[in-house]
Picture 1 (tube, one colour):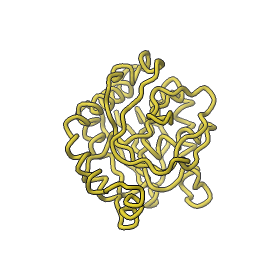
Picture 2: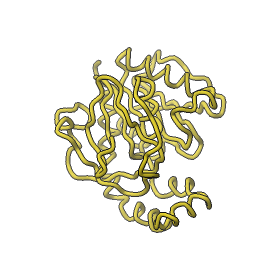
Picture 3: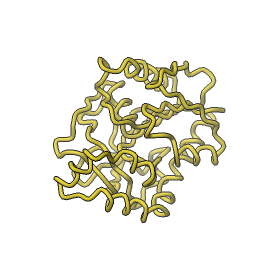
Picture 4: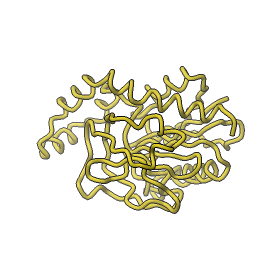
Length: 237
């Protein structure tokens, strides 16, 4: 059985998460809507993974594929297809289901941030096994500032921002990036962004070095998420 992967931009591929899914026995079919790939229906797919990107989940009027991706997400949730959104994908799931996405009033989040599990996470079928101290890579401007009806926060940042959300019985989102290593993040760091980071007292090379130094820690923290998602997708409904 295959998992449908929606990749919103070239620079944020499935990368590590895709490898971990395949190691867990899942086949992947990756579509690139930004490049004109048509979105298939969910027939024959065991799960839906929506990745990150630099655009906004609110760009329906600017990008003609945003609306169809949200419709695909709504179909997946309605049909009980296991669904996971990462960063922009997380925001797209939230927006598709009636939540609100907006720029973070504290500004861009960058680098390694601790995961602040809530009590609700302990009993979650996907994240319950992960409720131990761990960090994740954050690299985002926007946030899900208002949850859709019925959603529940499973983890939050030290600033009390949603970090992991359960949107439905078989739908989740993570604001962090479990799929990346420093080589992927380095492709996001433009000269303009280096300057913006420096203005905030942050050094891009230091952030990348910190991510590289934490590679074993991050693999240990997030490979089980991919394995758990594959188990849900490939197992009985």
